[in-house]
Length: 325
Length: 297
Image (cartoon, rainbow over all chains, first blue to last red; front, side, top):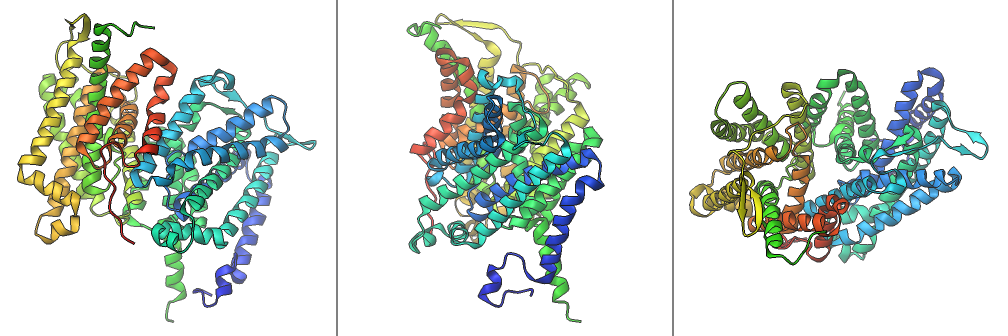
């Protein structure tokens, strides 16, 4: 089962009994979590799920398509603010979330189309500029509370109150699992293959009939949309959003997540999100040392393991499975 | 709203904008020098500069070294830091992709920022200017003498870099490595030493920019965050592989930003640079003076 021998194995989302057992354990553990641990841990796991969504969205853009984005906090902010403003006007959560996804997806298109001709550092700085511009615009926009930010309440969906950390966790979990499943499916679909082709050799992909403009902007739209969904979930989770909470450092952290987790592997994005979120929560008890250690860990991973944490895990697994005795 | 027509106003805006612009240009120059030689988008550039500024500050306040000498010593220290970063982190790094090295510098930026906070504290410190400040009047406009010296010093450094790259063997070797690293190695150039020299020179530029910028505001671990992002914008507007482009981008950005702040709106000034870069890239995907890399399938 280690190497793919037939075409069908390449199409399976979950491979073999070990895969199904792992997936089952993870799902059961995720559902039972609020019953087993303290409230603040549930809150942080919800935060990880939201960040995991952003990491997945960035993995579509950077890992699958090879387009860099240093401004994903901008998409997260857009999603969070659209949700917050609409919720403030009395719109139900059932409609605010799709609206947030729609607005950020359009924003992704607006930023994606001019980015078609950009590559490498130019794209990185253009997206960095986008993220910073969004932050500055929110900072000066009185309607959304300018720099003092805005309060966001936990939603009530179809008469169901998601006020507590536990109930809201289930809402985030359900949407995250659904979205993760969609993204994993996307990778093995023809769209995923086209995006991979664009990443590996865009000229060759174009010659094989893949419309570069179409797929590059599609990657931006999908990525922005998922980040918008994450934003819509992020606002009610933290309860209070300010432009400052969507700063450059946050965009950088999202990029760190997918690279530290393992660039090009979708599970790597989730591993990286868990690792970075966990590391941050753990280090916050050390206050003064936290930033130093955080940076040092990132450097260590970059110096020692190019494939990231998930890539290292794959290497270890292959080593054990091909052990000759 | 100021009167646009007066000669003195135009002069005032041009000179004040050029003063800010010379900081942006210095930062952009360091970034471009690094990028075209090593293909690294160096996000630790600002933090290297801030670290050197802290060294100058400690030398000046705690050890009573004259500020001019502290300034010079900090430049030397910055060169050493740049060289050490290359030797200890960049050279042994296994992740050699452009994105991997970018992430490495991001980690480095966080580490240096954390180190600043631990060693020197996060409170705001006042850094003295290189020369005592006074007001100079010329052509009906008034300027701060210290900021004119800042602009002049920036220009001198750019000239020095140009001389290094044009007239010295090291400079020519640096350009060769920037063009084709493999061929440079094949004809026997000591590529590693050249890369080491590049890191050291870029670090000196970073330190100079930070030490010239710090007196205009307050010194804390995140002082260079704004000039660094503007420096990136200037570098990209000029073209990431063009040194004259970096200088032009820096000055144009400095002046335009001031014009927007005065004549359009102060709120818009903060986001102007970031919207401008997107706009420039729509029409010139490789910056104003940059050239596209030739690519083969």
